Length: 185
Image (tube, rainbow, N blue to C red):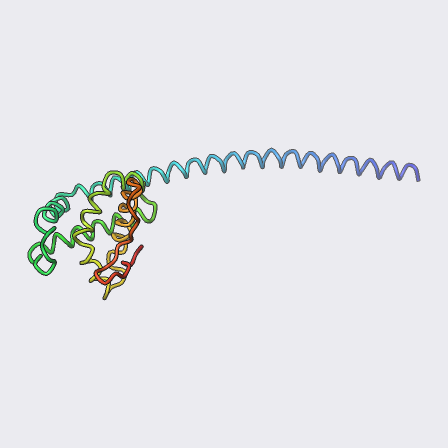
């Protein structure tokens, strides 16, 4: 019996050593995989940042487009004090501005471009445009509720940033002429 007990302990010892050796090998492999995952995460972060940079370049290209800049010039020089019913031949400029800021708003809302950078550099242009076009957008939203919702979001973001820069101002969300909050906020 003593010999069979010694044999059992010997077999158990060999098995324990084998299990321990497998655990060591598994631990090393797990550490290697963990390091590879860390490298993949770093690569993914870099890829996402590169994509955000490319998206920002695309947004800048939209905002520097000759037609858009012409539309903004018309908005600031001719449409600011003119009732929307009299926009007539300049209505294509209105649509250009709305669609461009709506697309850029989509990129900003989706965190596809750096929000703070956009607000810092183009926030005033968004606010200027909304001050003229806000009623136009709210009228369109009565029949198409999501019309320029991302432009409205972008305006709120930029206006709030401006208000937070001047602490004496109260925060107000955009509303139509009836006092209803504009969709997309």
